[in-house]
Image 1 (cartoon, rainbow, N blue to C red):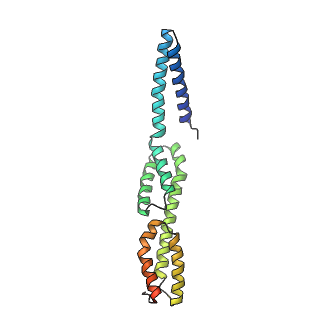
Image 2 (cartoon, rainbow, N blue to C red; image 1 turned 60 degrees about the vertical axis):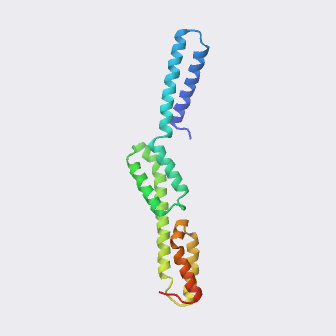
Image 3 (cartoon, helix red, strand yellow; image 1 turned 90 degrees about the vertical axis):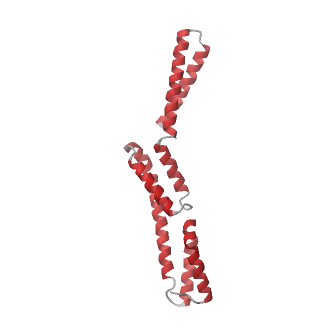
Length: 178
């Protein structure tokens, strides 16, 4: 994606190279001095533009957002919430122009967090209601719960693994405590 900063950076690199070529292959002292000044100035401005395009706060927010979105199912929910809160605080401090670029990804992360929370709540509700009914109904609910459990993210599965093992053990023995 070509942005204003990358276009400016390419222009500064071209100016720097042309200035160096003029400096090296020109016989005139005045032109050598002028080309050296242009080379130094284009190098300094190029470094500043590169620094702002790579290491600015907006770029850090964007890279963190991309990382969290890509690995949301493998990161514990509490860490995701904490990171989202931190990113949102930094987002609020940005200029309006930069906010427009990051808003969709920030809301996408928020939606993923809400979805993960919803999946956890659904599973907890099913887990609480699984022991109601006859043994046949409980076995059916347990199979349904197990399918739901397998669709949960890894950190949710770790959280509820002990409950699932206990439930399966009780159902297999035919005695389920309510």
